[in-house]
Length: 166
Image (tube, rainbow, N blue to C red; front, side, top):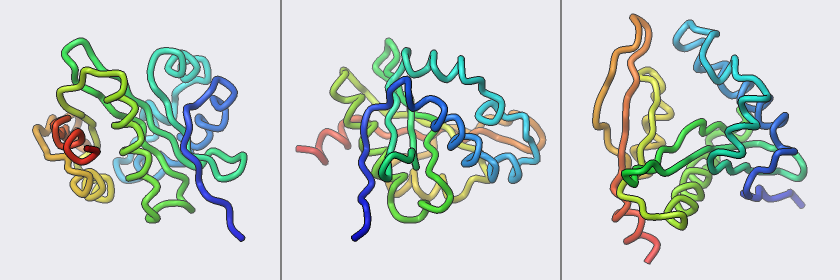
């Protein structure tokens, strides 16, 4: 009998596992863009602990192991910003990323009020772009950052989520 993945709120004691997972999960992004200096790979444990205190952080656990994580916060204008969605490479393509994203959307809606959800990804991150499109996100802008990277902003109105959960 296999274990099921449980999604829950991250605690300070999860910080080291989250940082290791983030480092592992963002290797493919660094390779894709030829940049191993990206923030997810250089973030300090102290900085991550500050984020745990400052925003919503969820983890997906398989037993005691953190196999997925996502962060989010709602700004003053009601825009729910979601980021750092990462799933362990061996757990990818099984719907866990979508489950984490939906769980974060629900959590941010509970904090309220939320007008829309927003997230960023790189223009070459085709798997991410497909996942976000399946979850109802639509591209709103593309901002060149360097010759290798353009950041794609995707958004979804909160009303879509409200209607889906009613």
